[in-house]
Image 1 (cartoon, rainbow, N blue to C red):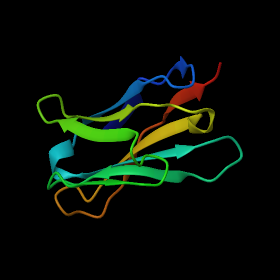
Image 2 (image 1 turned 180 degrees about the horizontal axis):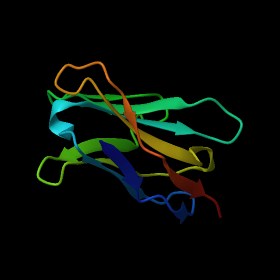
Image 3 (image 1 turned 45 degrees about the vertical axis):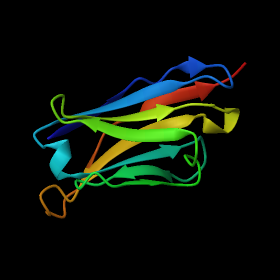
Image 4 (image 1 turned 30 degrees about the vertical axis):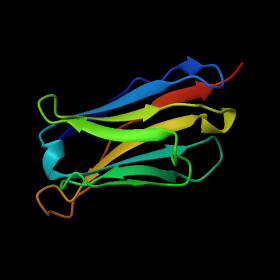
Length: 117
């Protein structure tokens, strides 16, 4: 099983980015897919979650600015981020768990988002 994030970049405040989380060995449509982020010297923070049912949830950092989605054909989950601020600067991680109801967790290695002028 592999979970791979991509799409991180350096952007100016107010900019947008779409992060991708591509999976192999599991079907994202059968898993609970979650985005977290971690800024330097800070704890990992919950960002957003997409359930296998299609239900979505957003943490405080994402409210009103981020959108989680998935493409089942590409077996990929996305995090569309708009209105980026300097405090969005972090490493963003994708997690897959509860795949077909099985309690096992898979993590990607992260993709870096830097928001700076």
